Image 1 (cartoon, rainbow, N blue to C red):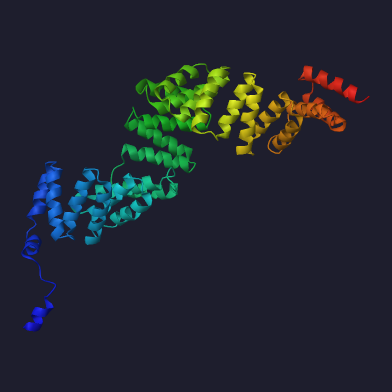
Image 2: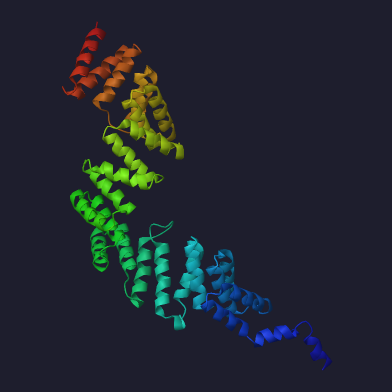
Length: 421
């Protein structure tokens, strides 16, 4: 008898602990409070109960739910994890943890929890909740996510559709996945199906327009977007696409559309960039350059914007400033042929023939020669009194020009006659 008593030493529970194990009324009360949205009462009761029953899966899940509802995300994650450990086959704990991790952008941690949920019995929650786990996996595995794969995401979505009806969001995802795999016909069919279900779906309109724009079916895209904007006039994605289509069609209507869009979203870099380009196309180099300066303030090492900045400055006859912009762009991105082209031209304008020749040489490794580059090369060699190379370049220019540049051709012939003496 004494030996048996010794075995119980250290295992004995206090009366409070015994009461907690036997009586779960605190959890019942907490759940009643949750139903009434009285989260504070629920939290207090659950915290007290978990002090004496720290491994109670039901209480852990409820506490996690309360923490999530109160935006105590870290606490919610930790409590859901404890709930899955306390009851490894708890569908609701695994799916809740997986969905929460997906929501806070931790896909690598969310995936195993969601996969676990797909293997478990959802019980009274029903197969719709299991389908939700598959849908969450499809979103995580979609190509738009780092490490995403369209085929895997398609399989996830197919698994969801085997046990539940297709939703409008499913249809849109199916369209995006078909587009990602290059199946434009399936993508177009899915977008049309989505619009049949939801005729005002801006996302479906945008997706279908994107397909048409990719195929350069601009008139069709323009009409589609015109109709879509009649239903959603302030949708930024639709307006941006509409402006892009009008720009591609060289229609003047692109400018007011973009100006309106920019006024509503002045900090959107993509919209600012589009408006900057349309201003330049319209010959408004001053306003275009103001937007270039704004973009470069945010991203000073954007070589493409630096090139646009340089080109605007050339049109504004600010050659020295343009030279600096092109020089920086060529250093940042040595594979940008337009940067070398601009550098060669502005170096010529600022009387730097050696830099002109070097820039033209580097450009030639990326882009084919043109009559303009050949003429620049010839005049640079001429300035350096490199008679042999100047004669060769002038002759190459005359062959390439073929009567299309009369002023420069006359000058080249005059210089050849002089150099031949």
